[in-house]
Length: 467
Ligand SMILES: Cc1cc2nc3c(=O)[nH]c(=O)nc-3n(C[C@H](O)[C@H](O)[C@H](O)COP(=O)(O)OP(=O)(O)OC[C@H]3O[C@@H](n4cnc5c(N)ncnc54)[C@H](O)[C@@H]3O)c2cc1C
Image (cartoon, rainbow, N blue to C red; front, side, top):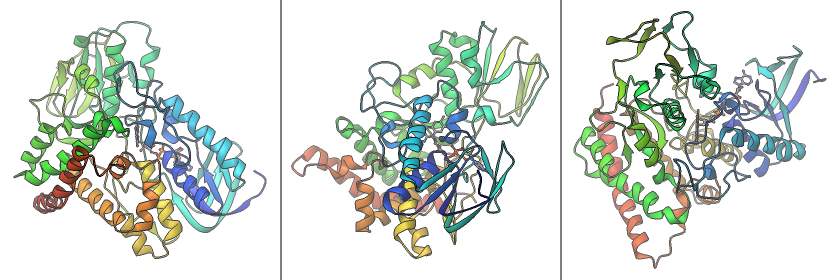
């Protein structure tokens, strides 16, 4: 860095998946310049800190940036994702973003990239290595691609006490284990907890040696219902239709969740425990079968303290052994749940505008910013789809998702742009149906017939929810 002041059209803070997906659309759809600043040394954000055995939990074909495919275009032949579309591993995701940066963004001459630099939130950023500070003169927008504050176990501090000297590690350390421990305590019932348990079972740790702390059980999504390729039409679009039917026909929130489960939209690990959490974690049926092998599930609320011979929970205690290994999976993937308007004058705060689809959302936001002059209209088209935490957050999330889908469908140009964007998940399955195919058109008809009644039911339940 030699200049102390640089000009750009867009300043993007964060080269994680969302910042990259946003910059990619600006590059493809305009002649604007973009400056990207990030504290990591490579693009990909939290994937730089992830555990070595991490994979996407949704198909690769709709992750990454719009202009470059990530999927290898194949169905997995082995493993717990067998029979489903491929899931990129963490290293594959990182190498993909590196390729996008080095071979697409930088050669364009319109993207400047400043890794290992911290943005100071005052129009300047500072090199973490040289200490040099640069002022950025932004002609158009400053884009906060850090807003969701993604957390992963290796960069997070647990919110409970751990006695000195106990082997308490993030799940990143599992592949480095050299010996058997007398027991393993996995802390966290979300996606990383699931990944830790699956890794341990795959590597021959007996299910009975694993203790799994689940302060709340979660509703899970079936990955088989999120498949973007034609052979999965019935399952994927059928699940969408079944979802709207279940909502529309339900008589209460509890009945709605029961119907969603019966329809195969939601899964849970233990049929006898009603989940209170929904984070959008997605599993295959084979993974679910594995997870159900764990019988030592501890449901005594959150951990307060881990002592050498016992663990103290909100609702009780359990004996442990000093030789146990404690595996931290307690990081909440999204650290910031506070919704804010996406467009605020010369600032953009990247958030999800489609259910658990961060990269698609960032791409749509970029397109809307380039093509719509009015801020109120931009925010209407990019209404935030709140990230869920509690089970009932699913109601607000789904209602906001349906509202955005409807608004997009009413705007012919935007609808066409989304339809041609590869990050548009599995929606193309519905668009490409041959009108003569009566079985498929029947599925789409169920979807259409139930969408308005489902929306009304969601609004009713949301109004009845306690504040
Ligand atoms: C294990 C796991 C699996 C997932 N699988 C999927 C999936 O299959 N499909 C899917 O759609 N989503 C998936 N997600 C979610 C998705 O990956 C994340 O939501 C998304 O990648 C978040 O990207 P981001 O750009 O918002 O944040 P981040 O990846 O956290 O990037 C933010 C970047 O901002 C930088 N930064 C922060 N502050 C500053 C500052 N002051 N100055 C400079 N730089 C700064 C950070 O260094 C970081 O690189 C998964 C998430 C996890 C944890």
